[in-house]
Amino acid sequence: MVELTLENKLKRIIVVGDRVLIRPKEQNEKTKTGLYLPPGVKEKEHVQSGYVMKVGPGYPLPLPNESDQPWKEEEAKYIPLQAKEGDLALFLQKGAHEVRLDDQKYFIVPQSSILMLEREEDL
Image 1: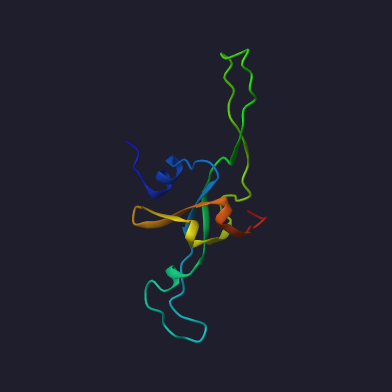
Image 2: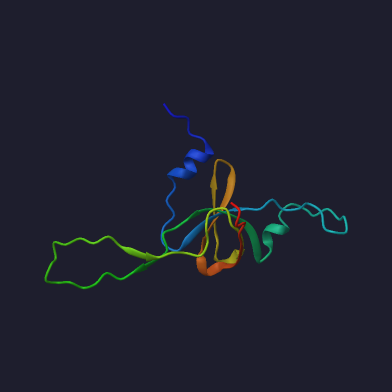
């Protein structure tokens, strides 16, 4: 029997449509001037940052209407998303939905809520 780890569970997750699964970046407990922040202050900011863990297939394209061949099944086609696994994303908290997996917080974010991506080209 295979042991279920967080990595195995992430492999089993399928993100749907134009959504992205983001693991929030660790927040600093101190400000630049050295003041300690109470828990939850950073979480209430409108813009959050985190790492892209999984990406959905993209925006679905409509299938051509071929009524003369109803038996013909075509696979859906998608316009891919700009986000890729491993990117650092800045996103709007308002459009995000928080989920928990093994006591780790994640956000499911539509691509339209992502403001900026930082990508390491070497990876």
